[in-house]
Length: 164
Image (cartoon, rainbow, N blue to C red; front, top):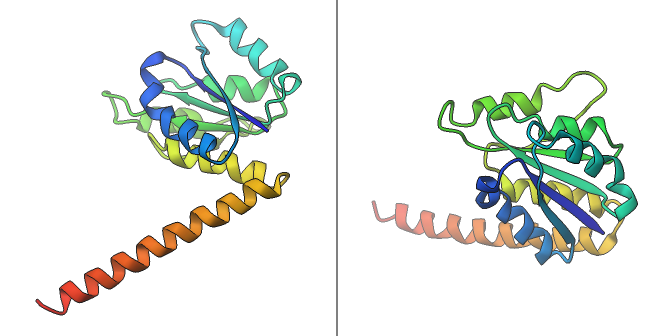
């Protein structure tokens, strides 16, 4: 099982790192690349068109501003593509989010929140979990750990609030 994590610029590395870290913790191989939809369009087309041949099963695309990378990749493959909008100075990432989520009919790109690297990784893992039971089991453990933490936080807040 392999997920490609592609960013439009090296400056997006901090945003994709949580996705890569999470996927690796689940035992998923990752291929991390910088490919620009606008500055290296031939490479973007080629990468997406041949991704499945290289064993890639999901593609995460991080991009800011015009953020066309996910759409370009989705146009060239039948693999699931997850768009990861990157926060920008201009509009705080709203420009990126809208560029990714407003895809034309027939070219879907699943989209997570601005700078939502962890959720992009989790969504990729959930997609893989349909096929790989070991990933589904790791996801169940991950969610159980979240539940334990929230229950502990709840108990702590209730105890603190009782003393107000």
